[in-house]
Image (cartoon, rainbow, N blue to C red):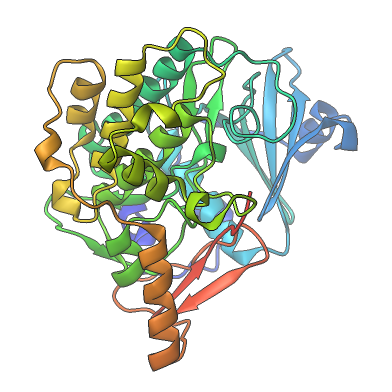
Amino acid sequence: MSMFSWCFGKRAFPAGGVDRELSDVENVRTYTYKEMRVATEDFRPENKIGQGGFGSVYKGTLKDGSLVAIKVLSAESSQGLKEFLTEITVISDIQHENLVKLHGYCVEGNSRILVYGYLENGSLDQTLLGSGQCSINFTWEVRKKICIGVTKGLAYLHEEVQPHVIHRDIKASNILLDEHFTPKISDFGLAKLFPSHLTHISTRIAGTQGYLAPEYAMRGQLTRKADIYSFGVLLLEIVSGRPNQNRRLPVEDQYLLERVWQQYREGELESLVDTSMEDVDMDEACLYLKIGLLCAQSLPKSRPSMSNVMKMLNGELELSEKDLADPGLLSELMNYKTVKNNTSGTSSSGSGNHDDSRSYGNTTTSYANMTFTAITER
């Protein structure tokens, strides 16, 4: 069965189960459950380094001494099984400095486990945007490196891999840092293949509130421009050191994208550059904020390609401020949701070729003709 067919939800899984689905996968090895138990010291709680909607992540040591991150899928999650298969098939076929490396997987009984290289400096939401103490000094040069690295990874997925890959869940928690602060895009469970002859994919919504492009969140129309919107929001977070939503702030400050747009219009972008940076090039930081706004434009056609984003970040292509219009704002999306719910009711059904949406927390927001699951707060 081809990766193309099941990534677009056109076939159910055959009776042969997961083993048959993975029979053609190359470039990754299989592990036994015993090896996973030994690596994690029988999944000791002290080795647990993460918890997601579909299971837990443990730090482990393989027999050869390699440090790994072991992602254990919850046995009760059928949706997670689909993501498990997607992640293995997509990431096993591609290698890039700014994408996580999949060492292998374990399928034994009810166990579904992914084995990745361990990344010492965790995720951006835990470190740069986390509320706790962080020992990492996120200088301007480090932040530039992260921005450019993520751009390279996305440009590779969007423009070099065939068929192209849409990640669908670009956000701070899915950007991991190695010991040298090289960013790695992770979590390909929601990824979609995007053959070049298509203009868009119609799909049920899956992703995280605050990072979703308007045309995708409202109509289920997915293109590479949805990833670019998410990247734009991420870029604003990295430069400002603020999460895209913070409900502890006054209403007018809660949504970062709205705040950046307002400060841009008032000529006060500098006020949003993270003051914890001592070495910041203010002109460059403000340029990065403007590029973030350009990536988050309301109209998909107004957003640049990732290769052009790279040129802008490197100063090889000038950003034309006349191209900056209103971005796709979260408040407008939430107003749309309210209107649709009040006039049409709610439904968990979608149109076109569907896959299930993903839950990142305890909050599920149902839109008319779609289901949207998301985190409401960090």
